[in-house]
Image (cartoon, rainbow, N blue to C red; front, side, top):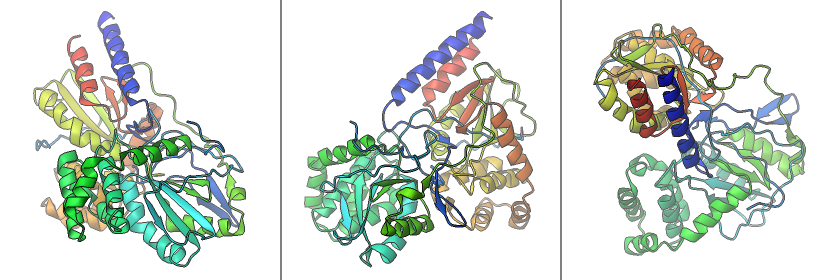
Length: 494
């Protein structure tokens, strides 16, 4: 009993530190399912909540209703272990995915957004409708909006004079450490009359500079400027001087004051729209705005009849069953992860934290690591098929390889309609029998197992991804390695 109490105290202290470190506008660590709001149409409803992948998205983040007056790879093949998936409650607001359930009032009050400090402007300043977007250049959901939806908005509404499109900066520093550099780069390009070209190029080449460190990212972005025919000496000096840093911070603080908690976030004539929404939603919103009826379209969505129970406060016994796992099944510490292959926070855990857990505890025989599925289908439409793809690969002894491939290429397939073909291509690259793999995926042979993982996770208090149980003790979100290290060492000392 003394050992158990010791672990609980240590874990509580660790999580307290993690939450304190996460306080602020840019600290989310997990994808969380949330209550969307809807815009009521005749004959039906159009989902106006974040459609993330988010990240994540519906893969994006939630924006609170704005107030009238702003206030301030290991290669070791895992063994089959059990059928379960994960979801985690999101600790703090402001990131690429929904942080808290958001239900706008029936008639929100439009806000006034300052336009003079915008990063970019497109269209007629006298257009009847104004759209203001708060963006993060390192956000995958913003990239999706820029590549899939924004070109249609430009062609159909901006170029025709109906919409003025304003872009403001909202870098989520704790999630995207290079985002602020990219924001400065776009503004420096604007000094050379090349904002639009740089804006598009930064998003199109996001995978080349994202996550490689500030110095290397700056080098890549300077290379982009050179390819666009800009004066790179002047451009580099602009970035190094920090001449735009203050206005970028001003944009961020303004967005926070208006209730922005993630990216992309939009205000259409002052009314909030959250997340990387499809073009159909914007078309409908613009139609209503042109008629002066946008406010009346905001209605609360009915609350779900069934909600996940709160996260467990005591250790829970989760069966491993036939889930896939890596490590020694007799290890003294068992970590069960509930994951969503389309979740950006799960990518972060996979690429930054898991390798250290593997090197320091799994290879030594101290930890047995179990994988469970928890696809957040309401915000990540392709996540269920991704979970199935990993399991179909597992049928051919390649679960871990496909698991890594799906996370490493998340930006390639997230949001795509032909994921079965994409995943089958990955299977071929891994040397699998593609005909067998494709049949497995097309027939949904593992769909029931995936969904049963979700049900199991919900029953045990999982509400978002990634979510973990360490010897039954619940840990939520993409926590830093030190959180796992201290929890594991505490258990090993028992």
